[in-house]
Length: 341
Image (cartoon, rainbow, N blue to C red; front, side, top):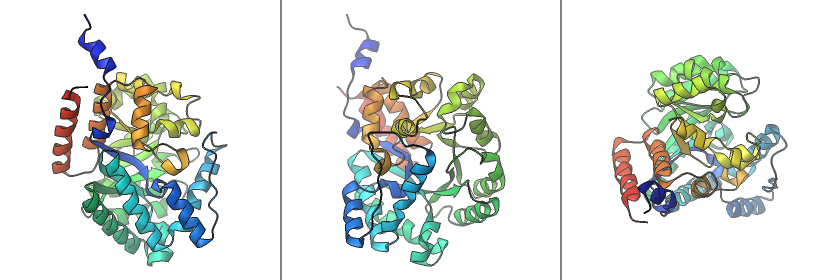
């Protein structure tokens, strides 16, 4: 007789139907490849794209490629199209909540100021969300390679938009040489305004940066955080405190955070009791969308449907969405898991 554990290991429910949040998605990199090509052709600009069959040579190459996307998105109509299409894509993949990582200062020349750019982006995201049935929140992303003064000023802008669509304050770019603790004041500003603290940590640097993000930045979530597996005490703390890691398997592979996809520590993290969400990070640069990442986690990393449902719930509960959305998503996740295969 087959026991329930064996049955669960064989379960293959439709992952599109699993309500999920997307908590680690940088807005510019959510552009469709065909849309990017069309925009490039229309503007007569070349946006160099990497060969997705190989890893990036280093993080600088990745960062430069990312910023190259701005060549087509500085045109307002193109940015608006990106927002609408990326929300449509999210809805098609079963996403009910997106927390876009955004950098409105990229668009100062287009809209006149960071505040004006942010308001327009929020308005367009709200329109797209209503159109496609997806709730949207914004994570304002501080660049850790910029000055502390710039970070504090940016945090003040984010704080001013708390409760108006901005839900979290992030910290991105290369960790190496730019420790999280430098931005204590910026994140204190965000936390005081009610924003979630959601820094990148534990991607290119070790578990010490995850611990610093937790202790100094009072992190509610950690974007990536996968090097935490190197520190058993840290894993225990993350699990005890319920701090969610917004994990991106393919991104970790192509940036050589892990040597091969089989070595990805997502299952180890989950087995240690650490909450994790599954994310695509930068689909235009890494290839998979969020649905493909869920499928990879099932087929390659060996997550059961129960574990995938747990990740989906973490992606909802640990985000900055509304209580109404969270309650509806929880009902949907429970129903998905209870459904026949």
